Image 1: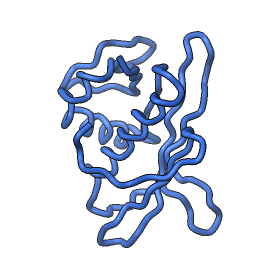
Image 2 (image 1 turned 90 degrees about the vertical axis):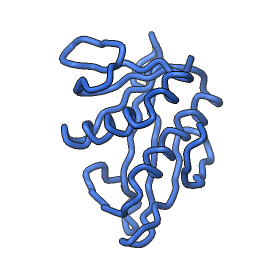
Image 3 (image 1 turned 90 degrees about the horizontal axis):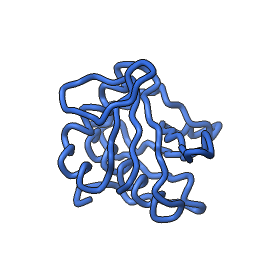
Image 4 (image 1 turned 180 degrees about the vertical axis):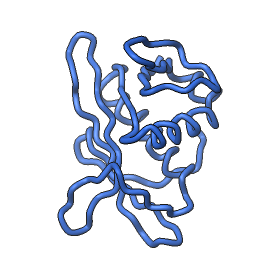
Length: 146
């Protein structure tokens, strides 16, 4: 993907860290991929701010660091990097709140055409999964690199 993004660090290609830089300073962000099931293989994408004291990751914090698009593009880059190392499995993603899920969907819609050239993207609503469409709200997403 040719989107501006932050440089990130990883030691195992399952956990990534990068710094968001903006008016609220430097905020450490963490992306984690955790296997949910084996057949088919599905990984959960967890994402949030790392507490500087405890090291725990908080997926409910709103940092308002005026760099949302760069942060979301960085998460997208980690997905691609993860697939390079672990294969083209399904990745499940949802926000910690409906508003956050909507934010992720807006980010997907912004680069929809570019994402769809490299990934199959599905929206989950209730207990059904659909090929994603713009301007349709979903509760969660499944993506798989082509």
